[in-house]
Length: 72
Image 1 (tube, helix red, strand yellow):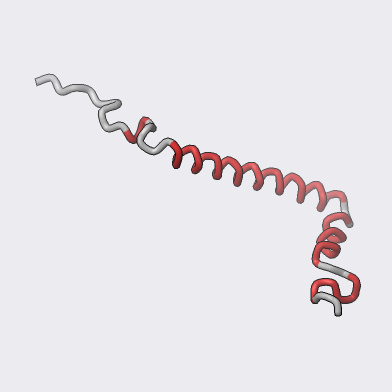
Image 2 (spheres, rainbow, N blue to C red):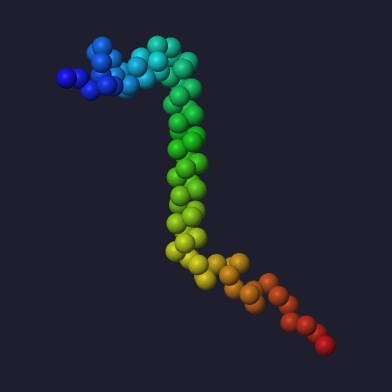
């Protein structure tokens, strides 16, 4: 008994492969968009990880930085 995704000899990945590889312009667009979105996802993840590991050590977390003493 075949799995539902492979009935008729065509699976999801094979259909996706055929769609992407049919034209060079579609393939190049897919690669460029994937690289851009992948870069954004990695940048966001690393930024959140850095913030999580440096809570209390960042410039924004120290209340006395950037304040001038009052001259009275």
